[in-house]
Image (cartoon, rainbow, N blue to C red):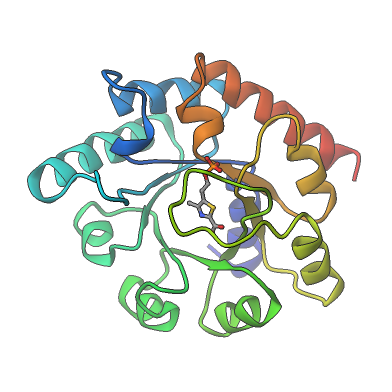
Length: 225
Ligand code: 3NM
């Protein structure tokens, strides 16, 4: 795929970017059910993120990762692994997402070749370093307050994205942190290509409906930008 087509495909895939690990789902509900519903509702990409104190390890982790990976392949959306290049390669994932505390983005780029590379960036210096390291997209946040990430920084507001765009950063951006169907439009208006959520879908009573509402909010904000 040439560079422009890849970038367009990334922008499309970032619209409703759903993240989940086993600790993000209500007790007794299989994560694969939630993912299937999210995709039906309009999730455009999935990231497997098995973090936190109660996260799965070893065989249980790999088994769940395989289930979710295969579901994404079957339904035709990209599957990204958070912060574990070995697992991503084992599953032939579509990409890897790393934060600032994870393996260096440039080292990940070397290991994954042309797979998608996403990098978290809180401010423009981190964004510029990620671009130099070969990132395909930036995850910018937390935009709003979140209780899902244990060590989240303070919320930046949508200005963090607006400022990156004003400084000329053109790489695809997805906003993250405390995003809901109610506040998603503002994130897109500030310059994001889409929104990334955990709890707005994984903790929703009806994940399909939750994903649909996010998709509608993002699409109408993009159409009016
Ligand atoms: N990363 P929710 S905030 C995984 O700021 C993650 O980089 C963040 O969960 C960052 O949609 C966050 O439930 C948690 O707020 C997002």
